[in-house]
Image 1 (cartoon, rainbow, N blue to C red):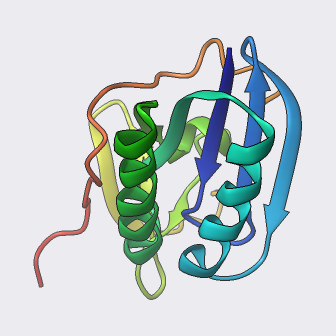
Image 2 (cartoon, one colour):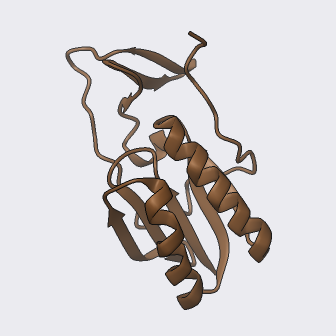
Length: 150
């Protein structure tokens, strides 16, 4: 089975193609999600028989998450492809993720919070895993907004 994983919450945008949960091809693209996803998916859908689309729905750039959700959900409906989501902390070793201004999203046993970096916090880049077998994908694909109302 061929699956796609889209991590659009930061730059570069990472897109991985997986066959039987193993990474077979990856893309690292600089730019806006709205500019990059349509042309890339046009090529991917011509070349591969995609059975599942996975994407990161929280936390990170809200605009990128919203654009990715609308685009990928539309593809999943029109092409009858299964659609799943997961948390971005799965792909950066649970390190803080840029939020707003000088604040970052942090995850601990109590959930996700927004706070300033501590001096011992380490920011790690997002990476496509070689295998997605142990990733916590779920059917709740709507974007999750973790920032409190202003």
